[in-house]
Amino acid sequence: MKTKIADLEFEPLLSAEAIEERIKAIGIQISNDYKHVVPVFIGVLNGSFLFIADLIKQIEIPCEITFTKLASYYGGTKSTLKIRDDIDFAMDIKGRDVVVIEDIVDTGNTAHYLLEKLRIKQPASIKLCSLLLKPKALLKKIDELKYVGFEIENEFVVGYGLDYKEMGRNLKDIYKRVK
Ligand code: 5GP
Image 1 (cartoon, rainbow, N blue to C red):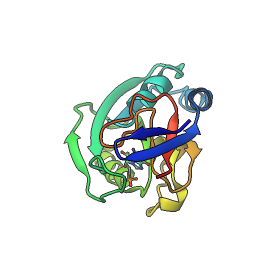
Image 2 (image 1 turned 90 degrees about the vertical axis):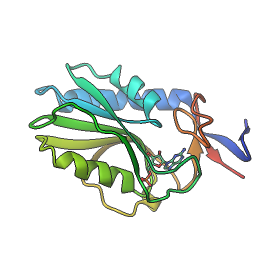
Image 3 (image 1 turned 60 degrees about the vertical axis):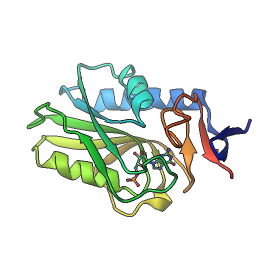
Image 4 (image 1 turned 90 degrees about the horizontal axis):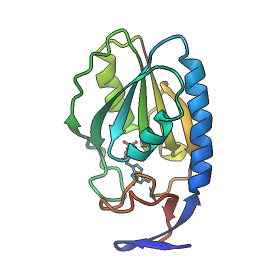
């Protein structure tokens, strides 16, 4: 069913059930990959708040969680290539195995910026886990991108934490823009 958010129209792309199933699989994979260490998850707010919460519940090994807040869209539908960095987390990640949790990798600029910042803190390893990836929009190769929920077309999406003009984050399913 179509839905309208502000001036734009959207239609369903990924159901809550499909998202849940995929997150369970990623949770199993990460729990297995990190079973010999205690990983630190860094959730990138705001868009990934539901993904972080749901993914973390599927992790069955001891782990730590912290958050950072970055934004590049400023409420619109196009990446601005400018990154606003609101929080620098206090946790010491030197020598730790870090998994960054993102909602979506679009141009890859945000991920690139954050990973560069994290590398300076000398973690033992860094991997990126993104619920969504737009392979056709990617401008930079991201070697750390190990876990991807869904690859999608180069289209604007909302729901399940992702917003348009700060709205639509509460939708259970993910919708794509049609108009
Ligand atoms: P990138 O820096 O990779 O171009 O963009 C990453 C950030 O832009 C994401 O973390 C997200 O906040 C925002 N973004 C990218 N694509 C979309 C989209 O289709 N919908 C929404 N709501 N945000 C997006």
